[in-house]
Image (tube, helix red, strand yellow):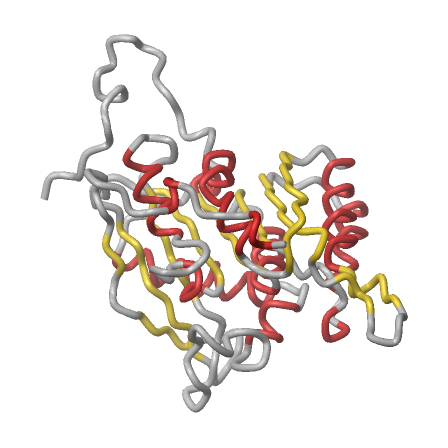
Length: 303
């Protein structure tokens, strides 16, 4: 089913588009999850000017979102859209789930819930992962990069368990982060952590100032066991749709795409450029026909 989805030009390296740089790997210890460290890389667009606060976009399972030959290639998306002024100049942070020093680094293989602290951090619906993002990661990034404190200028996203982690971080941290997206989000009762109850929590709570984009596929994990039994609490598509309905009923700034794909990043990666345009559509536009700056490409900042 995923054969129907392909990366478009906005996700590929384009000639004459200024290319941002990805930093060396940073490591920070975690007080929220004692004994673990979080590793992250920072994307800095060519247009970044340290004198001007930039937007901030955080990607869970960062190593996969920035993989140069992967199904997403978020750094290329940011390069292309920033160059054409379709999204604001932004710092991108690719953060991996926590791990102990003895555990292997997340990589192309084995980066799911089988290694590290990913199951506990990403699938839980309490505020601990939000505290990692808000109290540990963002302050560390701000030591080296000038990013805006305006919550409308901050976003977070992820895939699968990284998707529910993005939602939960934005939900608990809505005073500081207003934008989020998820690919095939794990809004299910994985590990009996209650992810499937988020739609009920949304319905029972006051509306938060969040802009949300959800993506899932009809061939995602559907809660069907080999013996023919069905567990609705483990049906990815069902619970994504239930969450969308709850958000819609509450009047959230919401968008979603239900494709035909499997549990993975192929469809989500193919529409990431449009997701980013939609999430960041309020960054401002000049309608002055004499504004020659806005009618030109966004050139690299002078060094």
